[in-house]
Amino acid sequence: MRCSVCGEAEFKSRDILWDRLINEWQLTQAETVYVNRQQGETCVTCGANLRSVALADAIRAARGTGELLGNFALSPEGRDVSILEINEAGSLSPRLRLFPKYLFGAYPEVDMHAIPYPDATFDLVIHSDTLEHVENPVHALQECRRVLKPGGALCFTVPIIVGRMTRNRAGLPPSYHGNPETSTDDLTVKHEFGADAWTYVMEAGFTSLAMHSVEYPCAIAFRATK
Ligand SMILES: [Zn+2]
Image 1 (cartoon, rainbow, N blue to C red):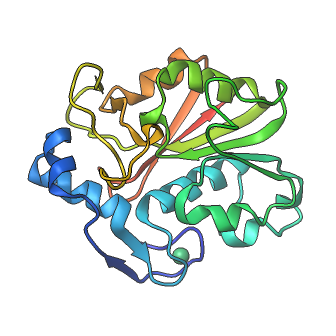
Image 2 (image 1 turned 90 degrees about the horizontal axis):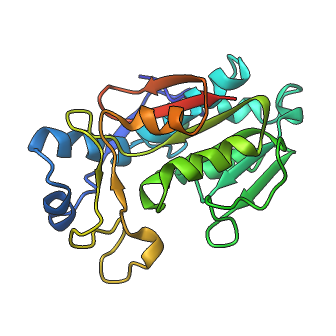
């Protein structure tokens, strides 16, 4: 396994999940292991975790480049790519900021339900582990599609438990990503995505979808083309 951000091959691991979240999410031991890997197994050199590596693969494929993401930003091809990053895409964020035509937006100023940009503005829209926190994922993905230029791509990750279907947590006890003592409402989990996660993307109007995985079933990134 090589890091698609910096090219190095040494990774280190730490567990991220805590007992309360594992219980709310009803994860098996095997599922706990792969969610911990996608979040907590990181490149020793650049700090990218496995989901960021998968997301970087999706971004590179969207632009058809063989360059590492860290080099692509400053390449002649990278200079012209207009990017909207919604909420910080973890350890990829510092690399994305290197692109000259880069915009960052975070909730609540940039709410995925009403993205404050005109139609067909960006070549790439990128978010990472945000979709599970929005009220209406299909509408949010429609908004991402709307602000993409024709031929542009939405690249994103969301935690996916591949052995079950998506569950809406409405009516269930609140579950948070982040510290439950200090979590705000935007860290509330609204949906726990499963094997049908891809259907949300197609319902949002995309006609083409690819998946990038690092060490399947952990760390799955979607690349949806407009
Ligand atoms: Zn790296």
